[in-house]
Length: 263
Image (cartoon, rainbow, N blue to C red; front, side, top):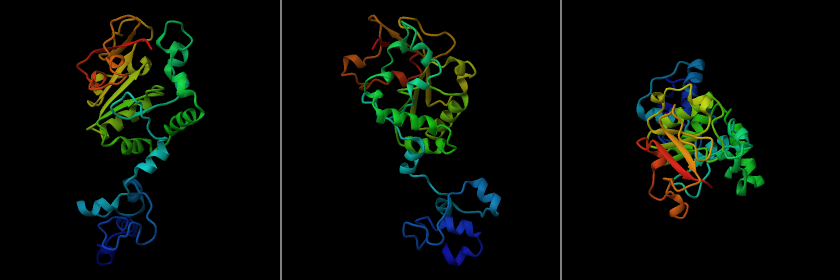
């Protein structure tokens, strides 16, 4: 394209095009004035958007890289037992869990995310960054960038849903990473009760976790998890080096309930 065609396309499009390796004089940086990131709406508001073929469109929109995505979101966590990465938030920010932590016999009373390595200052700082990042309008795009290409993903190995808007954003990330299987355990019944399970992205399973040890699964939600102090657990991790191994029951919608052993 470049100079031979540039005269017929608005200058902002030319600058964005010149960030593309398909531009003949591209050298890894903008050839002309430094290109800025433009979403479709902002381009249309400034100039009449040109019609580009597929090859041209590759260079028309700026693609977020993983370094930038990590800076925006605070990055992902890497639980040692999981088959893939996860996203976590401070356990103290849990809406329901922060109350249950003071209730004897509750699962949260011995919350693993309030002890051990989670108490290290660098870990706490990272968790707080991820919590603050939820308000960034680029969060969905950044999380999509980080998760794309992963086979398995867990939401909230620490922390929980913060709001319906947070949950809606997670749904959008799941839709944009359709080849990834997502699992989210939660105790935030107040949000799930406002949802129709049929509206959840098909590559996401949300398991409603029972609050008390040795209590049965909740009745209002199709996928659940429980914790036992006895021998009825179905999670095999304690028998295989505290690893998921080849088990994917938590991600499997055909498994109605997963029962974990008390930590």
